[in-house]
Length: 291
Image (cartoon, rainbow, N blue to C red; front, side, top):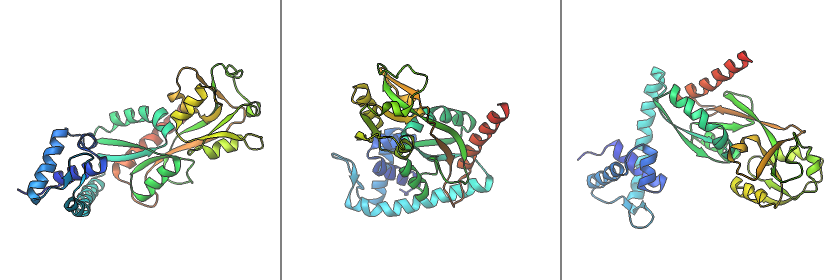
């Protein structure tokens, strides 16, 4: 029996994704197909590469195989990418990273449009904070990302997202068309300390607002505001995550963040990434012309 790349990809996916089911989802295969591929690899090598009891993890031998498998698969992907680049083809799988509010409020429509426009491109989404997303793009963990307020360079503007006050729907200011942030100084303030912290501090500059809680997870922040623990300031895209009992109100002090989709800085982009980004740029140009 001959060792092949499908077996190596299945092995790597199980290790990286933490199990056979999640590996199958990542590869677009059935769990049975992934299991058979790993079993075939083990028969070819004559030893098990995975512990299957409890949490799936490499055996000692599997750990030794892992680096070689990564090199072999990386070489295969590089050759495939080289062929795609030479033909200018938009095909294959690309990994995209974006902040949580972008994943919730912007990506679903964008992914649906890309799926229709580029049927041979598969996009896998990874969610992270602003700095994490930029790091992943820079170190090659992902091939494309939606960055927040990046420096000038290649990429396409997906949109601008204004910050809003997040209030309970029974808050005295909940029904106002807009809120002066100075009117929130007497409310307990909950600071979203993920990637949006610098924008929130810009909104509150010069005002005596001291957070009573620093909250990283947006789900926790929403639950705390809904429970009446305090108020917050968040991006407008959070509207996609709102639950009953909460409202977003525009701020009179307008602060926005620029959302830009692009490939890795300083490196050639895969044709699929270039095509996805160009599609966003073309859509923006058409919207500008129609406006």
